[in-house]
Length: 149
Image (cartoon, rainbow, N blue to C red; front, top):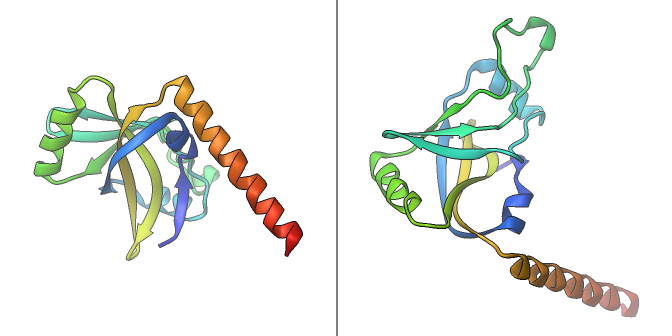
């Protein structure tokens, strides 16, 4: 499993409650662009419209800019392929206050591009400070162990 794009900010800004894996509706040049590592999902989010889910705000530039169609939009909304049961569950959870659907990473699974979604609750400033302190203390411990060994 190769990871092509990751949303590290999501893990810092949100507490991930559940994870889902879904496919994406892409055209050929978008797949090639993702596989070369040109895509980003940093500022993207997931919207539910009716019985469908869409990835909005993800940037997938054309594979070959000179050969791209003139009407190609690198930031267009892309349909997310989820089962009806998952869509109903996420629609119900989406109505709860404070919960959001956040894209976590783009990866391949058996030659297909997949998207990992997270059902997340936003962290407060206090929680973010605590996670920073934990990371710093873990780094200090690792440095201390390296200097001794």
